[in-house]
Amino acid sequence: DGGITQSPKYLFRKEGQNVTLSCEQNLNHDAMYWYRQDPGQGLRLIYYSQIVNDFQKGDIAEGYSVSREKKESFPLTVTSAQKNPTAFYLCASTGITEAFFGQGTRLTVV
Amino acid sequence: AQSVTQLGSHVSVSEGALVLLRCNYSSSVPPYLFWYVQYPNQGLQLLLKYTSAATLVKGINGFEAEFKKSETSFHLTKPSAHMSDAAEYFCAVSDRWSSGDKLTFGTGTRLAVRP
Image 1 (cartoon, rainbow over the protein chains, first blue to last red):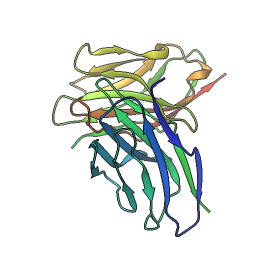
Image 2: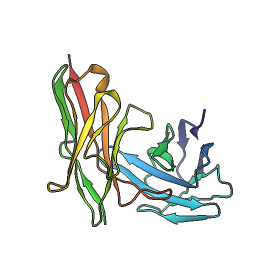
Image 3: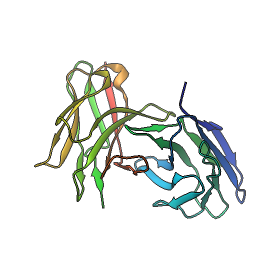
């Protein structure tokens, strides 16, 4: 079945550490996105990529980095510069008719 | 810039009652509008979308929404709520629909269904 796979489902980070969230899709979509979800704030765009080897900052890119070396993969790194990283992170890709979402990664700072 | 406003962060209805979740949008061009549902600790699932065809859009699980340009609204309705409808619902807008277009989301409405 085609879809988007995010891993891990739960992730714990110590203060000062970088962590990387994985997002893989087998839908052959060109465009991929990372959103951050906090209670009461909806989904906010972190980064997006419309094609391999190219990506753009979204509304809240500070403290995050991404890469797009392969069409299928769009990993997100939460760096130590992100002061409040505890949140639910969603990866998405867009096809002709709709956006498809992964099941999310819940990141907690311990 | 596009934006979406969802009135009411929490809505509670009785089982069997009408569900009405409100969404108003702002867009400088004819919008594409979407409703998504999210169950706890899961991703988003598309309920329905408006892409400039019929103004009344039917989606999955008995939901529908009507695009009203004069009111800049795209409210989500369901005639009879079911316990399984309890979830968070997000309205989203895009100013065109092609691969690579970003969605702008509202802040969400959490629907509770009382027995």
